Length: 136
Image (cartoon, rainbow, N blue to C red; front, side):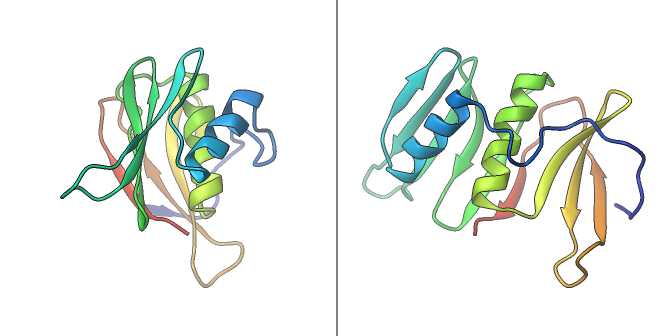
């Protein structure tokens, strides 16, 4: 992890949520199964398994949300759509992490918990790798 200034970034504005993303977030909040185009929400609620919402993009699970955590994973699909969906989820259910792209490389930009304008950065590898954060 590195600290602070990184050059210009390419990412979704925190307020630039698409209609599909808005419906996806609403389905998760209401704990309802939902599907539209390439995005699907599936509520997992079986005895003995912690209740969670799985979010699928192109039939790959890119996010798992439990009551306490949000786990994201681009599953090898480093597209603008994947980044947009993951950022909508991170913004809604975490609020301190964002995916940004700089010269084709994806980074996790994480707010420092105590310093308002301080961030840490972590490269997101091109191979599928999960990242887990506290859900707020």
